Amino acid sequence: MLSALPDGARFISADSERITWRTDAPARVDVIAFEEFARDGNDEAALAEYAGPLLPTIYDEWTTRDRERLQDLCHEVLARTIARERSERRFDAATAHVHRLLEDDPWREDMVRQLMAIRYESGDRAGALAAFDSFARRLRDEMKATPMPETIDLRDPVLRGARLATSEPPRRQPASGAPDIALPLVGRDAALEQARAAWHAAADGRPGVLFIGGEAGCGKSRLTTEFALIAEREGSVIVRGFTSSGEYAAGSTGNVSPIATISGSATGLGHPVGISLDADDNIYVADSGYLSGTPSVEVFAAGSNGNVAPKTTIAGTKTKFQGAIPYDVALDASGNLHVPEENKDTIATFAAGAHGNVKPSSTLKGKKTDLNSPVSLFIR
Image (spheres, rainbow, N blue to C red):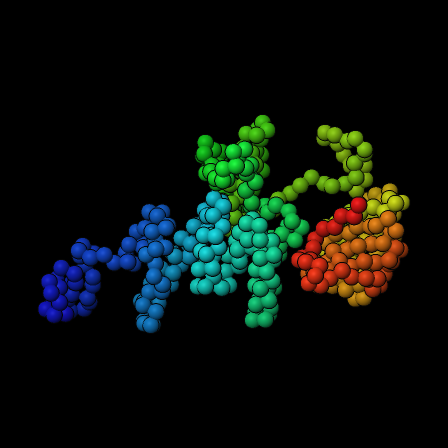
């Protein structure tokens, strides 16, 4: 080989046992360039160099090992790039890179979650839910499995139209009408490093509590969101909490306790997501059934407090709630009950006083309605 190639000794070293490429050869090797770019953090250049699996038609042990190592490195670079592009709100680029990774590994559920989040943050709520449904269907059909709890927990705020735990705060549009610019977080390196150290300590088995405080407008929300993104990329599950939504006295302000809270095993509540009152102040609660497995509408007497049972319940096969996910409840002036059903693109109406396993008196559905995963309802 050395004699057959012009000036072969400049490129190849050979002895009686092996042939190797000279690292000082005056030639450019895409594999070497890819690894150098990835190591230096030049992700864009690294992805441009990676042309696909190494020697895909050769199945020797050494090629398999290096092929998998290089592919894993490419996936690591893609994951970093996706997280950065999502943070910078470059959603089209992030979506393209998610699809590129999923083409290699369609069972990367963390990337399915990224795709859901990216579509939702870009305003494509239906696309986010479609990504979940498609993956859940493939899992069921091919693996006889269900999505991870983290994936289901991400779907929940999408259904409710709430902000994701790892979404950056919405940025204000400049008064001049100039396009919004995603600015990097600056001036918070020390605080961010302190938060990261606390997270690493917790991950190593030394749990603790991290408080972030400061005056209004100083950037607490942005710092917290940036930290949440870092922790999520490193394998953490992010849960965003809010204060209790109990009943408060009229005119309450400040740090006050609710005057009533309905909670406990007797209530039958598993995952309450919508609430409404009738003219007599009876409390109607839509329960999606995520935790209990039984979607329903629970009705509590006016003034209910504590671990109390509902006075009536609308649930059962005739209601068609199973698989429909009731996500809100509203009453009209006649006491009729209207329930948006997310999974069936339907608003079901039950007659005043309906209870038990009953059929809806009417349903609003069909292509002409333009209903697409309704999750809330307001009646004036």
